Length: 115
Image (cartoon, rainbow, N blue to C red):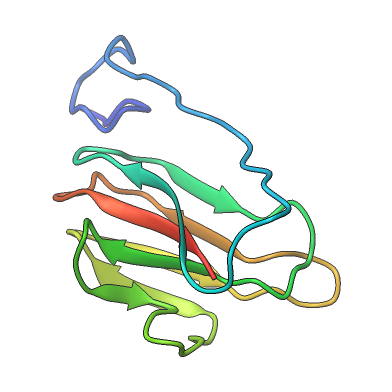
């Protein structure tokens, strides 16, 4: 048996629900700004800035501790393990914005924040 796109062993993709959106708020206050919460069970996650920015994507356990780009520190590109999965972080450069991917499924909700 194989995993389907939703991560269900032997599944037929019938339980998948794609959630997509674009966040565009040019007037955010200085500091950390909540964008969205990824629910428990989320899989095949991609969060990407559409262009280079001075802002960083940050991730934390829902309402709790940061595990990526928190506490006024910026992490380097790499793999960060939390919420039961590996998050791959690609820090922005002159040509692309920040990007975070994770296969999932998440074992707990994760807040997506921009700083």
